[in-house]
Amino acid sequence: MTYDAAGRVGPPVAPSLESAHDCSPRRSGSASLASVKSARHISAALLLTLLLLISMSVGVAQARTYYPEETQFLKLINDYRSQHGLHTLLLSGALSEAAARHSLDMGNFDFFAHDSQGSDFFPWGSTPWDRMEAMGYPSNATMGENLAAGMSSAQEAFDGWRNSSGHNRNMLLPDFRVIGIARRVVSGSPYTVYWTTDFGSVVDPSARSTVTAAQDGPFTDVTKADAELWDAARYVKSKGLFEGYPSGSLGAWDSMTHRHVALVLARAGLGSRQTWEDDYSLATRGEVMQAFPGLTWDSQRPSESIVRSQLVRLLYRAR
Image 1 (cartoon, rainbow, N blue to C red):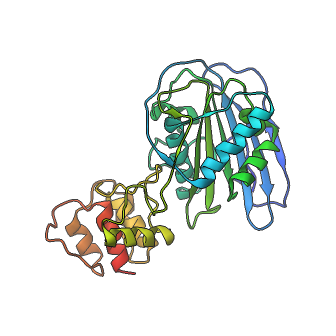
Image 2 (cartoon, rainbow, N blue to C red):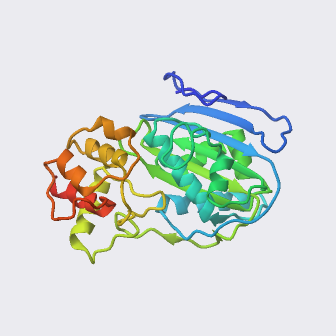
Image 3 (cartoon, rainbow, N blue to C red):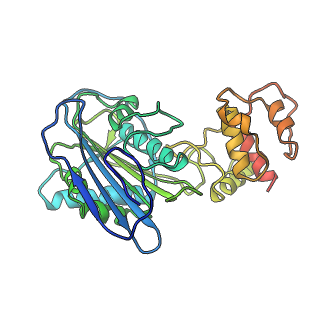
């Protein structure tokens, strides 16, 4: 596939590697852009990098867990920086959250670009800097972003970025002190695996030198204490029916919108409600009971909003 500097994805082309760079000096609010295209064996892979130069400030702490490929990428990039005489990077929770949300958006809304072209979290057209700042990262820092799609492992993403001058520049920029890393799998999307790494020059309060690995469960906030929910969560995650939050949690007691309910149930083959797909208001249990009569319920409170854990149970029972 091709990628142009305006952020549009074009038609498939023969395997090749291309890059375009704008190395002219930039002031606050502008960016230098490098793009690269690569087709690899079975699935195509895409890479993007972006760098914004501005100055410094403070952020908001966020505790989170990381998946094995994410922690492996941290090791790879820090070993690489050490080999070049540079300090290693701390993991920023704020930047990782911005990265995770963008990775999910790219898969769910079928785009590959630095600016949001559809999102469950940010306004349309949000830049990397908008997303990072929205997660609490200082607005007057030096920031950068690398993107990849179609690369399953940390090693593949690292090698692809290292072999592209624009991406490599971000990985080796001396100004950077922290990194946000997110690898997200979106089943049924064009590239399945989406990587976003966000970089910053300010060590914000969420930055950590050590990270907590994600537990072996389907979501970080689901435990075996509730056996049915554990089995249900494993089922929907393995089938790609429910991805949960970017942080890796299910958000078990969070209410769901009509749109989210409709998209999940359509993905599961349990019926379609197209009018719901543009409805961002909260759905009640009664509405879902009526719209999808094939589901098995144990609730007598139809006026209450349906929550995530309840829909996960319903999907499991309907399998």
